[in-house]
Each structure stands twice: as C-alpha cells, then as structure tokens.
Amino acid sequence: MLESVDDLKLAERLSRREPAAMEELVHRYHADIYRFLRHLTRRVEDAEDLAQQTLLRAVNGASRYDGRAPMRAWLFGIAFHEFGRWRRRRLWLPLIGDRPSPGNPYQKVEDAEVLLKAVSELSSLVRGVFLLHYVEDLSILEISAALGIPEGTVKSRLHAARTHLKTLLKEDENYVVEPV
View 1: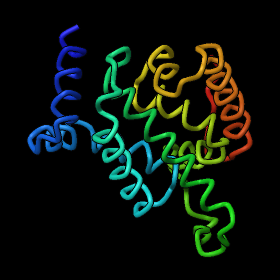
View 2: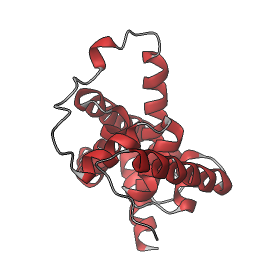
View 3: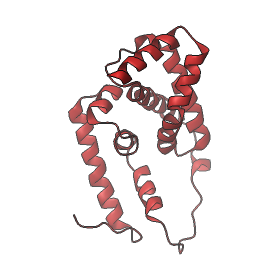
C-alpha cells in the first residue's frame, strides 16, 4: 500500500513537472526499463532511445496514472507500447546491417547465451510477456494491467513462451534441458 501511495505522489509531482520528481523517476526505473527494452530490441542504442522515450511519455502522461498497478508495471506497459511503435516503424527498413555476425561455431556456448538466443527467437508479444514475468518479476496481474490485456492472455503467452523455449533448447546441443 505504501508503494502505491508513493507512486501516486510521484505521479502528481511529475504532472507538475517538478525536476526532482523527474530525477527520481529516472533513478528508480531507468535501469529496469532499459534492460527490458534491451532484451526486446537486441540493440543498445535503440534500447536507450526507447527508454528515454518511455520516461518522457510517463512524465507527459503522469496525470493519467491511477495507481491500480505499481508505477513500475505501468512503465513497463508504456515501454512495451513504445517498442511496438518502434518495431512497426522499422518494418520497412532493410535489416541486413542489423544481423549479428556469426561467431566461432566451435566455441563452447554458455547456457545463459543459449537461453538469451532462444528468448530472442520468440515473437515480440510473447517475448515481452516472458521478460516482464521472468526477468522483471511482474505478476500475471501486473502484466495484465501494464499491457492492458486479460490475465488469460498473459497466461497463454507465458505458456507459449515456455513451450517454444523448451523445444528450442532441446534442439541446441550446447544446452541440456533437465527433466523435471
């Protein structure tokens, strides 16, 4: 409850454009938002731009924050929508320059790298929900509120992510999926 009161006070201060409130917003949430967007975009520069755009939209929309979800979840929702806008804008761009160069095929791949690669192969909608839940530790209810989608949709996307990841990871010879 204290968190929601603090979030509402911060939103009120942001709507008045208080510089200290903007600094607090950046201090509290920039790293989380950036990390989330970095996983989605797979590009440092784009993630930084989108994180800044997310925080700017949050400041401009602070008067609409109602406290139903924690501010962190609300910001992840804004970030995910910013990512969607960015992705739609990029659809027409040639992606040749964006492809990572192939690494040494004989190099031993660490489990974390293999997992990140598998996560990057998920669709953006599924990947976003997966990252919010497993990396950013948001609950299904918080993700639902942040993205404006039903809880059942969140659950089905999480299931799709787990199923797809399990399949991808079983196919990778450098990653061992332990039976449960």
